Amino acid sequence: MDDGVQPQRRWRPPPPDNGRLDGRDFRLTCESGFGDGWNAYAHSMAWFEGRLYVGTTRGTIPGMKLLSPPPDIKPWPVESPDNVYDIDRNSQIWRYTPQTDRWDMVYRAPDVMARNKSRMVARYVGMRGMTVFQGKSDLKPCIYCSTWAPAMAEPPDILRSEDGINFTVVKRPPWDVSVRSFRTLQVFGGRVHTSPTASNAGGKVQDSVGSEAVIYASEDLPTGVWKPVNDEGFGNKGNLTIFEMAEFNGYLYAGTVNPFTGFELWKTRGGDTLPYQWTKVLTHGAWRGPFNEVIVSMCEFKGALIVGTGIINGGYHRAFKLGPAAAEVLRVWPDDSWELLVGHSRVTPDGLKVPLSGLAAGFDNLFNGYVWRMATHGDYLYAGTFSWANSLPYLPNAKWPEDVLKLIRHWGMEHLTRNYGGFALWRTHDGVRWDCVTPNGFGNKYNWGVRNFASTPHGLFVATANPFGPRVAIKEQGEWKYVDNNRGGCEVFLGAAPSRQADA
Image (cartoon, rainbow, N blue to C red; front, top):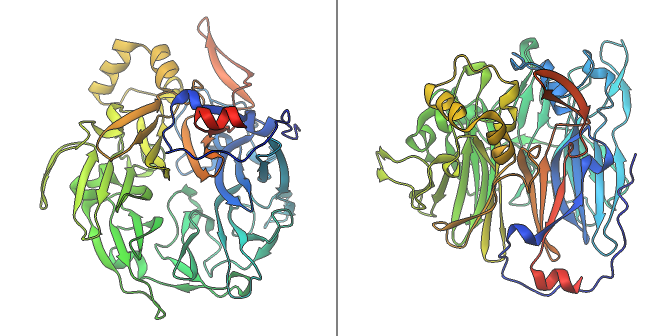
């Protein structure tokens, strides 16, 4: 395996900038999944003691064969064995040192005996969330990482490291054996908060839908003491999962998955008494209904909470036959009033809402099924999407809406996948005027999503989800075949102002 060594560069402290970056300001620091195309997602990321840490999820597309129901795609986009447990899916954590421009693998998940004793399996196939936190018994801030466990292993754990090299297991929250992963580790009020977001309850494997819509909190993770902080689904059975959390204006905000009436957004001041007292902020998917099924991302920006929406599974929820639909961007103010920044105009109980940016859902792009991640860097907000355009050649389209089929016939499959197959990255200074940094995954159509940002003293890191490795299906002269893909696997870009790059 490639150890990620890059040519060493002379390092100097970077000069400040206002955070305005164009596409040409980004350079690739890691390609092809750290030299291994099975590293599909840079699924978690944190800045810790002057270095960047990235946790990977491996073999994502082969793993989709286990979903209930599995995607109806032909051929399978990535060459893989019929039994996905034959793939090396042991998730990894990598560390980047800016001074030497070097990546090093600091953790690899071990193999364990499967629960049915039939074979050895990876203990974790993904690292889905990462944060830095100092609890009551921590002598210093530590890295904490939430994991994703395969169906044949025990439920997932939380990893802890004091030095970024040695990782140990701390006790997980008290959920049942059906939980397969938990997504967010949100620090608020002296506690870490998390919730389950994947399940194989009843033998049906679902990603992004957990076994319970409950948030658990701990003020001292090594003790393994976790307590629920909300009623199940905030009292609404349609809220299947608590998907995303964020801190804003002294409140903890939580967004749900609701495929029936659309997401709900709740907030709480927290406090010593558990469960917390919660207030509903938004309902019915901000009155777009199920087409705003889930709050995927949230970010504080210039006195407001910016909310990115979507439909799980990339814009089409197979289990509920929901979508496809493109994502929206909302702005929520401290008094709970809200505005539509990017999306579809509509009349709501809060009045007429039109997109202040003039951009329709998906930033005028049907294929942008999520606004997957957002980050503030300097004076700017950055929003990264997930695009399913690169999956077009593998998807059956007999039942697609006529407007989508008309678009494909007009532009052609090759044009759409080449120009829209990668994610879009947008930036704004005020939430109203937006500029596109890249429309196509920095020129790599296999980068189907921005999975993480990290704003650091060295610039803005952008980490991708790219599951199209190591070998991808392509069509030549009417025949499908698998070929090596040297642009498959997650990538990590570093964006810095020109003056900063010249001084590095």
